[in-house]
Image (cartoon, rainbow over all chains, first blue to last red; front, side, top):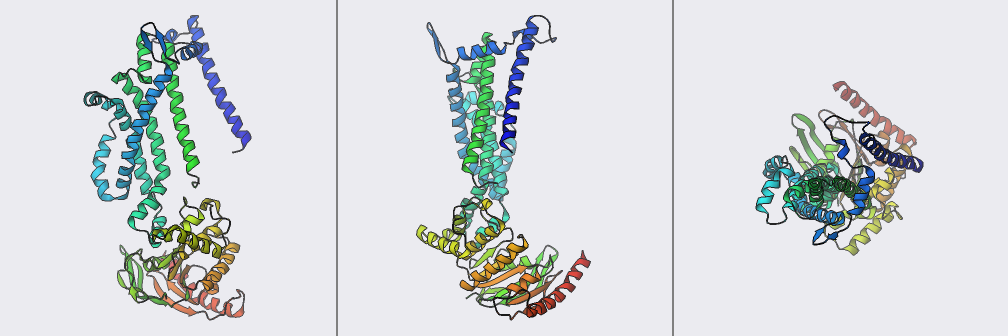
Length: 268
Length: 252
């Protein structure tokens, strides 16, 4: 793609965002003036973009009101990110070897597949009740783990199985032992798929953490924050928190894509 | 050393008779071209010689030893190069030496020698995707040679190249072969290529794959592609093959 075209696309993307915000503002003004309404929806309770912006700035940092302390969005972001990263690392450490084993060996595949096929269809949210029961702490990290581990396992399996037959033949005729074939051919060949699994998994994990924090009621975390703000009727802060969740998910996705491009220079 | 002998080799895939009673020999240091219509089992012969497949009947011997399991004394050069895309030129060539457990200095020395030999100086740290087809196959040849094989098995190595590059690479291959004299079994579907390269041309017929005729090409090298002698041999091979192609087409 030419640089000029790329620039044009970025401009269109930005305009679309600006347009959406404008539309949001206009609809709310019309609603509050009584000109526009939709039956069964309390549109007037929705904050305007300007109110949301002020709420975002106002609740960014921790404040102390007399004896009580309110955590800032900044703290909530880090608390949630920490859980996602911890759950993600555990999922990576377990998911990649399992995926390689299942993808490489029929026997290992037959052992693990029934469990994987059933458990992967239980959404991370379905694990929240049991997580509350059995984990003294770190229940939400476990929920993230459930969300991240299956995309990693499935993409790793797929990556291992799509290793080019000819590369395996080449390695064999070059005298590679079976263990060398796994470490020197199958794993590097599956690496881009593993990264894709990690990227998709962290996306799922990020959604799961918000749900988990709402239910598990940790004192910090974005899920807790928006639930709590909703409870208190502070909708501007709640919407600000939702936007932060979306933006951070987007940044995570893009960062892994960029890392992937940076480190996998050999890919077409 | 590097004498490959095939004794009445038979191979079936399910009910499909791929090879029937295939017998011929690649003498030590000889360059043999295997020619035949598509589907006649040329590639199967190579895969058997490499030990990537096992025959159903007959024997394959390398220097008198039966080939069982992957034959680590042969180098395989693939049509679509089959380079490891995540390895640079140098790292691709060092794959064999590393798999053997040679130390870094030795690997360096070997890769340097073969990079020089195939003329890829300056491209050591390039990835395969950054190379042209001809250069990729130079890496493929260097990688096969780097393992110090007794026998080089080449599966239509220049089939994906354009005509000019192809001629150039044929010359290069002969230059390398004359320096590092090992036996070569070269599969091709081009009569020109077979007669230009081979000491011997083995013509196969299809369904089932059999050896139809073997031609000795006793022309001195460097050969002239357009010489009268070359044309005479080419004509004979073409006739032998031509009938085969007709038969194979009828079958389809």
